[in-house]
Amino acid sequence: MSDLPVFTLNDLLSEPSFVLDDFTNDDAVELGLVAVDVIRERGANLAVRILRGDDEVFLAKLGSTGPGNDPWLAGKAATAARFKEPSLLVRRRHEDAGTPFGERPDIDHDVFKAHGGAVPIIVDDAVVGTITMSGEPDVVDHDTTVEAIHRFLARREASGA
Image (cartoon, rainbow, N blue to C red):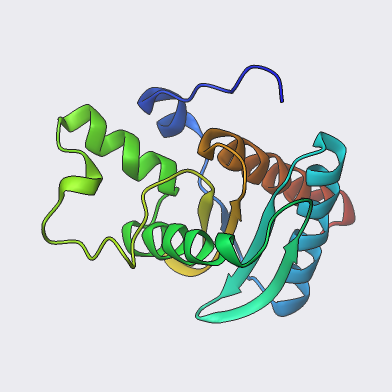
């Protein structure tokens, strides 16, 4: 992997939210397949998990990923869903405020992980699911997730969906 991407708080705030009119199981599978394409193109070792609500609709573990990624996939997704924003943005907000997420006493850190890689999927202003990646440095996880979202949205727009 070459130089790691850098995401400042302002960079993350300028990214559009992943807002859709609807999000079905078929959409989740399509998003997952797009994510697998991006992971393979980049030669990354990443697991990708798509949830609709609490239902795991898509899971793929590429390269050297495995069971060790499961707690990270779950923790990042829980963070994105709870805070209704990307898990990396949650971390950067806390860092910018001078209160590291990992030091918050009101958070169960076995459940919530503010590391990059999870993005909430929003329909009608409600989180209906998440896309999460884990396996590389968290900024790579985030960057790959965002690229998969962009490609998924471009395909939807091109097909008129």
